[in-house]
Image (cartoon, rainbow, N blue to C red; front, side):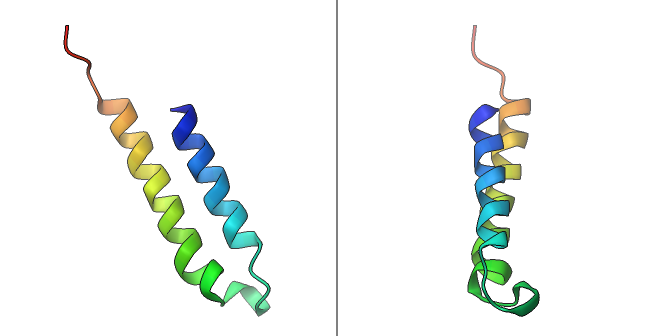
Length: 53
């Protein structure tokens, strides 16, 4: 879950680095949200994962 949190933080950081007005550049519209969604998917997987006994 810590890895997923790191992915989420990096996605939001990528979105904040966009230099276009109101974040309408490639980083704010495309790359950042994709990284954030990957972080949320990773977090859901980490919560639902059940290791074999």
